[in-house]
Image (tube, rainbow, N blue to C red; front, side, top):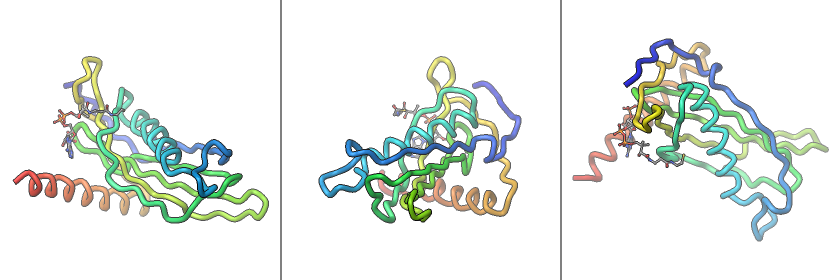
Length: 162
Ligand SMILES: CC(C)(COP(=O)(O)OP(=O)(O)OC[C@H]1O[C@@H](n2cnc3c(N)ncnc32)[C@H](O)[C@@H]1OP(=O)(O)O)[C@@H](O)C(=O)NCCC(=O)NCCS
């Protein structure tokens, strides 16, 4: 396993992207199709994970995804992602999705998601990721919450296997 020990901050991995909801992004209710939003989330989360580990990173799991409010056709969609927590070879990435009405200048949190990625070396084996060093109050809160989520997922896995 390669050893990349230089710690990184959440802002080292931070990525933002924007989309506009077009007709081919919608469901039969005329709002953004959840599968499309999930694809945008997975894409930006992968970019954040790659920026953290500077190697190939694959999605292990979507740990939580909440559609808080529907996103309408024509809305601008802003996605922000960064690494919340780093384990040995895995990373939790948090993604916030905000919808913006470009005419009314309204901005609303629409979706949140937490995904786990695993870093791979050139032989496609899990490889160590740099430790994460949260700096701001928000980053420290996200780090602690992510640590709790990761621990509880591992505990749940053990319980379910019994
Ligand atoms: C991701 C993958 C390489 C992990 O393989 P693996 O044999 O489970 O690897 P390991 O046992 O070494 O675990 C790697 C990390 O994932 C975590 N992990 C693995 N399975 C897990 C599970 N079911 N729940 C929670 N964490 C898990 C381990 O705890 C470890 O994290 P850590 O090193 O930070 O402690 C493998 O599952 C895989 O190839 N999955 C498919 C990925 C994919 O195709 N994604 C979609 C396209 S990007």
